[in-house]
Image 1 (cartoon, rainbow, N blue to C red):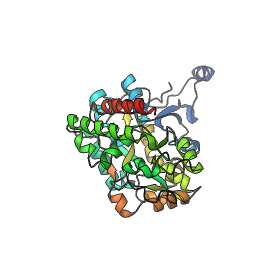
Image 2: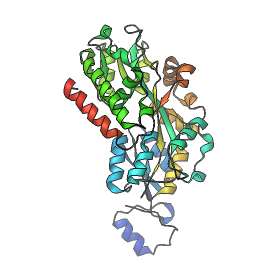
Image 3: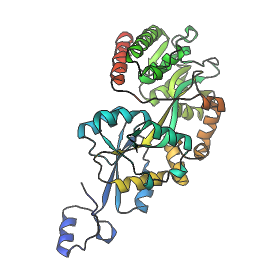
Image 4: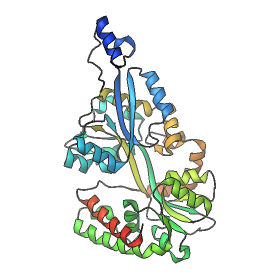
Length: 367
């Protein structure tokens, strides 16, 4: 792996020739190029943005590995936090993972222009990711999970529980992941996040949720795994409603404005994807440069056009492409935003409990 030396040496001619012969790239001025290894979500590193960054910083090469929350933690856990220089886990996947596996390092906030960030999102992430006075993450993009409905066919679909309403038998969908467990719990009048402090109570809630979702099998046309699967079912009219990421609903709104994102009446579940430094990353300075770069307004527009999510910067909603801005306005009122339920930090053991519950549901439903 190529590293940038602390200072630029004056390479003897033969050494420079040897390095080029060996295939080691040299940046302008003879410095060895540095590699910034990103561990992030699909669409969070669009090629046009990488090219723009590398043009601004010709001594840095960007290498991207696309992943998700579970895989990020697994990859970093397997290496003790090595192999990557900047990761983007969601805000609720840092605290417990750090306590258990020690896979991140504290941020130097003096190297990040936090003044551009939306204060409530910055404060929320800092509160969730501060350990012994050290901050381990800052926000990047945020969005929600909730419901999607064709308002001409399911105008009254407003609750997670409505996915199991006999009125929509055989015409709804959901993804068998933890989001539907949490949403169903809220619909049943429980607060799963408060129950994290009492895992025996949380298991009782999960058992009730499993029973409910197994009973719901007859309502489900198909369980979706990827956004493309869900989009195809909604656009074809095979289903009239589903549990979904808001970004998927926003994209479909542009094709059929009868298909809208519906914040559940108990509150859409909100996530914030962050910037965090892996414990054994080797390119911290390059990572800070990337963070500051992608939070600049003109680059926020490029990123949000790729992700469909709202940047955690002041006025982030206004930096969305016009089509996505219209979809957001069609989905959310100010009351809906005030009612958001941000994912809580996941204590040790909870994901295992949820995993067993999901396996139980899958075994009973064929999901």
